[in-house]
Amino acid sequence: MSNINTKRVYSILLLGVIGISFSAILIRNATAPASIIAMYRMIITFFLFIPVALVKSRNELAKTEIKDYILCCISGIFLALHFISWITSLSYTTVASSTVLVSMQPIFTSLIAYLIFKEGLSKKGAIGMTIAIFGSAVIGISNFHLGEGSIYGDTLALMGGLFGALYITIGRSMRKKISNLTYGFLVYGSCGLVILIINLTLKVPLIGYPEKDYMLFALMAIICTIGGHTVLNWGLKYVEASKISTFMLGEPVGATLWAILLLREYPSSMQIIGGIIILFGLYIFISTSLREDKSKKKIVKEGLELES
Image (tube, rainbow, N blue to C red):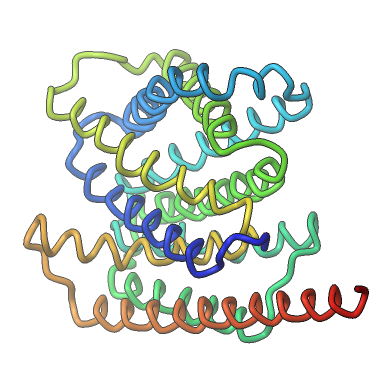
């Protein structure tokens, strides 16, 4: 991690988790097809980025290499596939099952990040991540169901986790080279374009949905994408990809809390137990990461003092 304060980074990342935790509730209240929800969410986000990016990132956009443009577009494609597969899964399986399976993303991210960047987790960090994943499993285990469509939905959710991991891993590489504004502008634009092409190809109606849906699309763009994904993308410059994915395991806990406050939907005993386990795992993970970062900074400082 760079010289930026570690606790500050983790505090900001927690705000990003709060942002993305609204996703399931907003999506469930929309009547439009999954691909339309994802398309409007990303296109609205992209249009909100345009004026700021053209003013603040004009020079950076002009200097960005072609290969980096391509990688950002590939990241956008994976984000598009993540949204479509995960949102579609909610129509074929339970919200809990979908959330649990898409939460397998940290495992995929850790494996990919290790193979590409040689980024590994400490034993205690891996234990914390495992506990948090187990907590996610506890939340959904009583809601898993077999039957027509459910296996298809569960598979889509799992694929959503894989696509999300690829998106996060590429973001880790790109955020070391370009600003968060430029990265978001290119990724969200390419993501929205890909989903638009998919909808046109499948002849999904692009308009004619209830006014309430368009309001929900805008809320998803502002709260979940800008306030969620963009915040997490910011953290990719300072934190390993696997850590960002692990932070995202807090999403089902946040979603449950919002369901209580906004929808008066109260969790089952299994969901409460699972949420406690997730929070315990995240506590181990975050506290371990903070200690490790403090230790690394101490070693670097002592090394510099010896050199001087």
